[in-house]
Amino acid sequence: MRHAMATQAQATRWSHAFTALGCRPFSTSSSPRSSGLTINADRLNETLHHTCQWGAAHRYGSDPTETGMARLALTDDDVRVRGWFADEVKSLGCSLKVDQMGNMFARRPGSGKIKAPMIAMGSHLDTQPRGGRYDGILGVMAAVEALRTLQENDYKTNFDVGIVNWTNEEGARFPKSMVSSGVWAGAIPIDQAWDLADVFHPAATIKSELQKHGYLGDVVCSSDATRGVALSAHFELHIEQGPILERAGKKIGVVSGAQAYKWLTFTVVGRDAHTGTTPLEARSDPLLAAAKMIASSHAIAKEHGALASTGIVKIPANSSTNTIASRTSFTLDIRHPEDSVVARVEKLCLDSFQHISKEDGKGVSVDWTLDTDSPAVKFDRGCIQAVEAAATNLVGRDGWLPITSGAGHDSVYTSSRCPTTMIFVPCRNGVSHHPEEYCSPEDCAIGTQALLDAVVYYDGVKGGAAA
Ligand SMILES: [Zn+2]
Image (cartoon, rainbow, N blue to C red; front, side, top):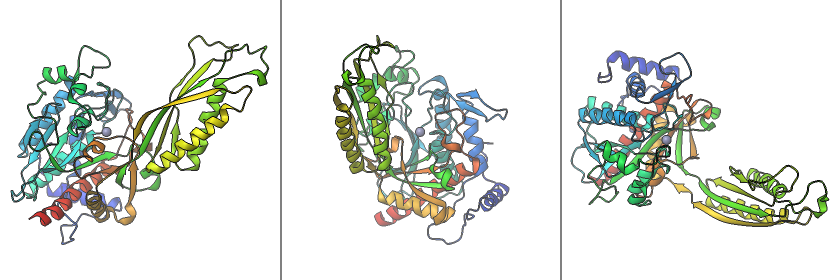
């Protein structure tokens, strides 16, 4: 069924599905923002689950689709779905390039009037070891459905339009997330990426696995048009991976960017002492101080609408129940869409921690390092406008929400090299990186329609201006 063209019956059913969802049926009439193209929701759903046969794992229900996924990058299952993808895009009239990181670039020719790189729809086919059927996979399958829709309608875009499957986005097998879009964007040296070892079997590296499976392509992994594969724009559909859209009852998140974050490590030093013989005022207790610091960071973040989290706390391995610990270290991860708010929360935390270090007993000393400083990413205004237009046409102005990405995505790297944005769709209970990750067929379809419409809209605006 996966090669079947949309039938009239399917199109009608789809139109009814939209109406049932309270969405505007997509019209072929003269709306200036309408592509006049309708994706096939059933075909999208069938294809998504068809390709999840490669890597299906962690069954949680009786329906054939009620499993999670374990499709780690460059494993046999990943190679099988890559093979399917290559055959599929070729059958849709695309050329296919594979670069030195195994990134796959499928390109469907446009009208030929514009000499510019393709407009891409990109995401990833690899998953977490206990992942689900939608994170990344939906973005690629939606892009395939968008190209099928263009193809069966014989629709000529101004630009070439295509798909990117980015390698090892999850960083689950080779421990660096978004590593291949990072190399493409010039942010990560390729040798460093190639040398990343499999976390379970360190004898295998990204490079050895690319070689083994025939995915060490001959195209340079670069956004430079003369050596690698340049893109005119990058659009990525993704599940939200959080609860905001679902709670707000919205169908589409128009993503304005990715939030800023800073990671710090604090070391608090005191003195070991007997818990039974040392009065409270004579103590220098680093674990007590660290606990108060963590609580304080939470209060400060809350006050500023930011996030502050401690994921690691360490005390000496030889600590004991009846001894005050001699030192404690802990991490702090601060996040907010605005760089200035992250900086303000960091400053207030540092002030507060100094204060806390003097509060109890004889006090403690506190020291820190800044480990990561990742400024906020703002996506491209023109791409965002294309998504806003598509979303408004599809679900009305009240059906979508501007949103900031809380997680990293390949789009964060592409945005440094070409106009980029993302589209989010709700996922059940905000759950992801879990076998029960779920996005309803209706929401997958709405996201896919928005992706196609946004690309066609952007192609029309930019293509019209360039022609
Ligand atoms: Zn993802």
